[in-house]
Length: 252
Image (cartoon, rainbow, N blue to C red; front, side, top):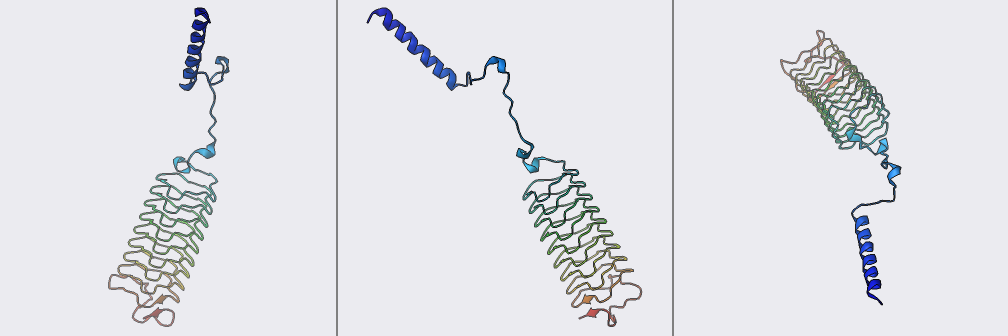
Protein backbone atom coordinates (compact mmCIF):
# COMPACT_ATOMS: atom_id res chain seq x y z
CA UNK A 1 0.00 0.00 0.00
CA UNK A 2 1.37 3.34 -1.03
CA UNK A 3 1.98 6.28 1.25
CA UNK A 4 -0.91 8.19 -0.28
CA UNK A 5 -3.38 5.41 0.42
CA UNK A 6 -2.26 5.15 4.06
CA UNK A 7 -2.63 8.92 4.41
CA UNK A 8 -6.18 8.84 3.07
CA UNK A 9 -7.13 6.03 5.47
CA UNK A 10 -5.87 8.05 8.45
CA UNK A 11 -7.82 11.12 7.30
CA UNK A 12 -11.02 9.06 6.96
CA UNK A 13 -10.57 7.57 10.42
CA UNK A 14 -10.13 11.02 11.93
CA UNK A 15 -13.32 12.24 10.26
CA UNK A 16 -15.26 9.30 11.69
CA UNK A 17 -13.98 10.10 15.20
CA UNK A 18 -14.89 13.77 14.81
CA UNK A 19 -18.43 12.89 13.70
CA UNK A 20 -18.90 10.50 16.63
CA UNK A 21 -17.75 13.14 19.10
CA UNK A 22 -20.05 15.73 17.51
CA UNK A 23 -23.10 13.54 17.95
CA UNK A 24 -22.10 12.67 21.53
CA UNK A 25 -22.11 16.33 22.64
CA UNK A 26 -25.56 17.04 21.17
CA UNK A 27 -24.77 18.11 17.67
CA UNK A 28 -27.14 17.40 14.81
CA UNK A 29 -30.17 15.58 16.29
CA UNK A 30 -31.67 14.80 12.96
CA UNK A 31 -33.60 18.06 12.55
CA UNK A 32 -32.56 20.34 9.73
CA UNK A 33 -31.91 24.04 10.20
CA UNK A 34 -35.08 24.74 8.24
CA UNK A 35 -37.19 22.79 10.68
CA UNK A 36 -36.94 25.48 13.37
CA UNK A 37 -36.97 24.76 17.11
CA UNK A 38 -38.65 21.56 18.23
CA UNK A 39 -41.73 22.38 20.34
CA UNK A 40 -42.25 20.48 23.59
CA UNK A 41 -45.88 20.02 24.51
CA UNK A 42 -46.65 20.09 28.22
CA UNK A 43 -50.22 18.98 28.85
CA UNK A 44 -52.07 20.82 31.61
CA UNK A 45 -52.61 17.56 33.48
CA UNK A 46 -48.85 17.18 33.91
CA UNK A 47 -48.67 20.27 36.12
CA UNK A 48 -48.63 19.14 39.76
CA UNK A 49 -51.92 19.98 41.46
CA UNK A 50 -50.22 21.76 44.34
CA UNK A 51 -48.62 24.29 41.96
CA UNK A 52 -51.92 25.50 40.54
CA UNK A 53 -53.07 28.25 42.88
CA UNK A 54 -56.28 29.25 41.12
CA UNK A 55 -59.18 26.80 41.08
CA UNK A 56 -62.00 29.34 40.82
CA UNK A 57 -65.05 27.49 39.45
CA UNK A 58 -62.79 24.53 38.63
CA UNK A 59 -63.97 20.93 38.63
CA UNK A 60 -61.58 19.07 40.92
CA UNK A 61 -64.14 16.55 42.14
CA UNK A 62 -62.42 13.37 43.29
CA UNK A 63 -58.92 14.84 42.82
CA UNK A 64 -56.09 13.95 45.17
CA UNK A 65 -54.55 16.86 47.10
CA UNK A 66 -53.19 14.76 49.97
CA UNK A 67 -50.35 16.55 51.80
CA UNK A 68 -50.36 19.29 49.15
CA UNK A 69 -49.19 22.80 50.13
CA UNK A 70 -52.22 24.87 49.14
CA UNK A 71 -51.79 27.98 51.25
CA UNK A 72 -53.81 30.95 49.89
CA UNK A 73 -55.21 28.84 47.05
CA UNK A 74 -58.51 30.11 45.65
CA UNK A 75 -61.24 27.44 45.35
CA UNK A 76 -64.13 29.90 45.12
CA UNK A 77 -67.19 28.20 43.56
CA UNK A 78 -65.11 25.11 42.80
CA UNK A 79 -66.57 21.61 42.61
CA UNK A 80 -64.40 19.61 45.02
CA UNK A 81 -66.86 16.88 45.91
CA UNK A 82 -65.15 13.70 47.14
CA UNK A 83 -61.72 15.37 46.83
CA UNK A 84 -58.93 14.18 49.09
CA UNK A 85 -57.38 16.96 51.20
CA UNK A 86 -55.99 14.68 53.91
CA UNK A 87 -53.05 16.36 55.68
CA UNK A 88 -53.11 19.18 53.13
CA UNK A 89 -51.96 22.67 54.16
CA UNK A 90 -54.91 25.00 53.48
CA UNK A 91 -54.04 28.04 55.58
CA UNK A 92 -55.67 31.25 54.25
CA UNK A 93 -57.24 29.38 51.32
CA UNK A 94 -60.63 30.48 50.00
CA UNK A 95 -63.43 27.91 49.60
CA UNK A 96 -66.30 30.40 49.39
CA UNK A 97 -69.40 28.62 48.02
CA UNK A 98 -67.28 25.59 47.09
CA UNK A 99 -68.91 22.16 46.81
CA UNK A 100 -67.01 19.94 49.24
CA UNK A 101 -69.62 17.39 50.19
CA UNK A 102 -68.15 13.94 50.89
CA UNK A 103 -64.62 15.39 50.71
CA UNK A 104 -61.93 14.13 53.08
CA UNK A 105 -59.93 16.61 55.18
CA UNK A 106 -58.49 14.26 57.79
CA UNK A 107 -55.70 16.03 59.70
CA UNK A 108 -55.80 18.95 57.26
CA UNK A 109 -54.44 22.28 58.50
CA UNK A 110 -56.75 25.14 57.56
CA UNK A 111 -56.00 28.14 59.78
CA UNK A 112 -57.86 31.36 58.86
CA UNK A 113 -59.40 29.58 55.87
CA UNK A 114 -62.61 30.89 54.32
CA UNK A 115 -65.45 28.36 54.00
CA UNK A 116 -68.30 30.89 53.81
CA UNK A 117 -71.48 29.36 52.34
CA UNK A 118 -69.57 26.23 51.32
CA UNK A 119 -71.26 22.84 51.07
CA UNK A 120 -69.45 20.56 53.53
CA UNK A 121 -72.16 17.97 54.08
CA UNK A 122 -70.86 14.50 54.98
CA UNK A 123 -67.18 15.52 54.99
CA UNK A 124 -64.69 13.52 57.04
CA UNK A 125 -62.33 15.85 58.90
CA UNK A 126 -61.13 13.97 61.96
CA UNK A 127 -58.42 15.94 63.81
CA UNK A 128 -58.45 18.72 61.23
CA UNK A 129 -57.39 22.21 62.36
CA UNK A 130 -59.83 24.98 61.44
CA UNK A 131 -58.46 27.59 63.86
CA UNK A 132 -59.89 31.07 63.17
CA UNK A 133 -61.67 29.78 60.06
CA UNK A 134 -64.83 31.41 58.70
CA UNK A 135 -67.76 29.02 58.19
CA UNK A 136 -70.50 31.63 58.00
CA UNK A 137 -73.56 30.11 56.33
CA UNK A 138 -71.79 26.81 55.59
CA UNK A 139 -73.68 23.50 55.40
CA UNK A 140 -71.94 20.80 57.47
CA UNK A 141 -74.74 18.35 58.14
CA UNK A 142 -73.60 14.85 59.16
CA UNK A 143 -69.95 15.94 59.04
CA UNK A 144 -67.41 13.74 60.81
CA UNK A 145 -65.41 16.20 62.93
CA UNK A 146 -64.02 14.09 65.76
CA UNK A 147 -61.28 16.01 67.62
CA UNK A 148 -61.40 18.81 65.05
CA UNK A 149 -60.17 22.21 66.28
CA UNK A 150 -62.45 25.22 65.67
CA UNK A 151 -60.78 27.55 68.18
CA UNK A 152 -61.87 31.16 67.54
CA UNK A 153 -63.72 30.15 64.37
CA UNK A 154 -66.65 32.19 63.01
CA UNK A 155 -69.59 29.84 62.46
CA UNK A 156 -72.58 32.17 62.25
CA UNK A 157 -75.65 30.51 60.68
CA UNK A 158 -73.71 27.28 60.15
CA UNK A 159 -75.66 24.02 59.82
CA UNK A 160 -74.20 21.09 61.78
CA UNK A 161 -77.25 18.86 62.09
CA UNK A 162 -76.39 15.31 63.18
CA UNK A 163 -72.69 16.11 62.92
CA UNK A 164 -70.25 14.01 64.96
CA UNK A 165 -68.15 16.39 67.04
CA UNK A 166 -66.82 14.11 69.77
CA UNK A 167 -63.91 15.86 71.58
CA UNK A 168 -63.92 18.76 69.13
CA UNK A 169 -62.63 22.15 70.31
CA UNK A 170 -64.76 25.30 69.97
CA UNK A 171 -63.00 27.60 72.43
CA UNK A 172 -64.01 31.18 71.70
CA UNK A 173 -65.91 30.18 68.55
CA UNK A 174 -68.97 32.16 67.40
CA UNK A 175 -71.92 29.88 66.63
CA UNK A 176 -74.74 32.42 66.79
CA UNK A 177 -77.89 31.21 65.01
CA UNK A 178 -76.16 27.88 64.32
CA UNK A 179 -78.26 24.74 63.79
CA UNK A 180 -76.78 21.82 65.76
CA UNK A 181 -79.91 19.74 66.19
CA UNK A 182 -79.10 16.11 66.82
CA UNK A 183 -75.33 16.68 66.84
CA UNK A 184 -73.06 14.55 69.02
CA UNK A 185 -70.88 16.95 71.03
CA UNK A 186 -69.70 14.49 73.64
CA UNK A 187 -66.64 15.77 75.55
CA UNK A 188 -66.37 18.90 73.44
CA UNK A 189 -64.47 21.95 74.69
CA UNK A 190 -66.96 24.81 74.43
CA UNK A 191 -65.27 27.24 76.79
CA UNK A 192 -66.12 30.80 75.80
CA UNK A 193 -68.13 29.71 72.74
CA UNK A 194 -71.12 31.85 71.73
CA UNK A 195 -74.32 29.89 70.95
CA UNK A 196 -76.67 32.89 71.08
CA UNK A 197 -79.99 31.96 69.41
CA UNK A 198 -78.55 28.62 68.30
CA UNK A 199 -80.69 25.49 67.96
CA UNK A 200 -79.31 22.61 70.00
CA UNK A 201 -82.42 20.46 70.37
CA UNK A 202 -81.60 16.77 70.88
CA UNK A 203 -77.89 17.56 71.00
CA UNK A 204 -75.64 15.27 73.06
CA UNK A 205 -73.37 17.31 75.33
CA UNK A 206 -72.21 14.54 77.65
CA UNK A 207 -69.11 15.61 79.63
CA UNK A 208 -68.77 18.82 77.60
CA UNK A 209 -66.99 21.83 79.12
CA UNK A 210 -69.42 24.76 79.06
CA UNK A 211 -67.53 27.22 81.24
CA UNK A 212 -67.92 30.72 79.84
CA UNK A 213 -70.19 29.50 77.02
CA UNK A 214 -73.15 31.70 76.05
CA UNK A 215 -76.54 30.08 75.35
CA UNK A 216 -78.68 33.23 75.45
CA UNK A 217 -81.83 32.69 73.41
CA UNK A 218 -80.73 29.18 72.44
CA UNK A 219 -83.15 26.26 72.07
CA UNK A 220 -82.12 23.42 74.39
CA UNK A 221 -85.00 20.95 74.20
CA UNK A 222 -84.09 17.33 74.98
CA UNK A 223 -80.39 18.06 75.30
CA UNK A 224 -78.28 15.49 77.16
CA UNK A 225 -76.21 17.49 79.68
CA UNK A 226 -74.96 14.47 81.62
CA UNK A 227 -71.67 15.18 83.41
CA UNK A 228 -71.22 18.61 81.80
CA UNK A 229 -68.95 21.17 83.42
CA UNK A 230 -70.29 24.72 83.83
CA UNK A 231 -69.91 27.60 86.28
CA UNK A 232 -71.15 31.10 87.02
CA UNK A 233 -69.69 32.38 83.74
CA UNK A 234 -71.96 30.11 81.69
CA UNK A 235 -74.88 32.12 80.28
CA UNK A 236 -78.19 30.22 79.95
CA UNK A 237 -81.43 31.21 78.21
CA UNK A 238 -83.73 33.36 80.33
CA UNK A 239 -86.24 30.55 80.88
CA UNK A 240 -83.65 27.85 81.57
CA UNK A 241 -82.41 26.81 85.01
CA UNK A 242 -79.59 24.22 84.92
CA UNK A 243 -80.30 23.38 88.56
CA UNK A 244 -83.89 22.46 87.64
CA UNK A 245 -84.05 21.76 83.90
CA UNK A 246 -87.30 19.80 84.10
CA UNK A 247 -88.01 16.82 81.90
CA UNK A 248 -86.85 18.40 78.63
CA UNK A 249 -83.14 18.04 79.32
CA UNK A 250 -80.93 15.69 81.29
CA UNK A 251 -78.35 16.78 83.83
CA UNK A 252 -76.23 14.19 85.60
